[in-house]
Image (cartoon, rainbow, N blue to C red; front, side, top):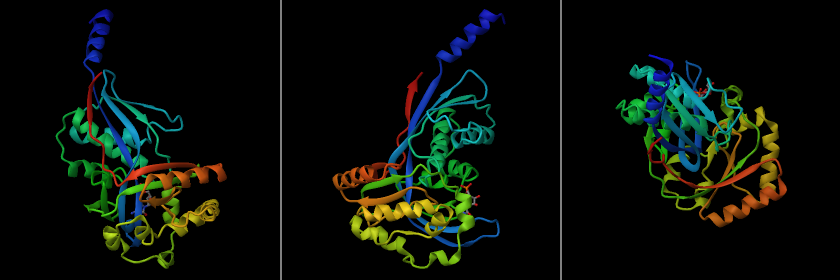
Length: 311
Ligand code: C5P
């Protein structure tokens, strides 16, 4: 083929590009119980997780170029390590495709904040590529591909609310009576999940209500629910990053009495029945604590719909 013919062919293929987009929501752990250490080095968990409206936005397009290209608004994101890229690569490999793809990732969920942003990006990318490449896998098969990428990926196929068990791969949908708003307080401090689990000690579980996840399902108000919030990893988070312990004291001093760390941190959250008091609390924190960002978002929410577009 001559160079002009090749260029024409490429332009034609490019003009037929298809795209799919969706929001990838974040999550918080209302409860997180560490039940023991497993032989494979991971920890046996039981966690009640809900989806939160704060979301990354992902567009996947077929590409005339080979390989998986990533464009992201966060310049610190590493292409090869990125979970959206790894998810697309894993699905292409599973289905024997070359996986020529362009991913546009708009990050809004803080990285290393315990909000599951990377895992949610992976789950959403699997759904998007499954649709774009018409690979025909059901949600269970996609979640199984996701489980290979990270312990938190499967839960994103079962939101708005789920009980997560095992290493994270056993996920059951549940229904919460409560719905409302979450105030997220995000310090600019990424925390390593592996480091937090390494710092975990069995007596860190003392002082938290046991089996609270069952009662939480019936709680009707943020006040009732807040008394039951549990995170066995929280003491380890504060050992790994003492600055966060100081920040928690500051937030309590500002009147935010019911706060918890989500997952392995670093984000704190507090629950509200209505958005106005949540925004008021957010404004007060922004006035007094300069180094954090605050977000008020609805919860529980599920994964967003997949939207198709001609590119
Ligand atoms: O699975 P993922 O790569 O997200 O986990 C990160 C790290 O967190 C693991 O390497 C492991 O040290 C720890 N982890 C754990 N038990 C779990 C989940 C994660 O010990 N259930």
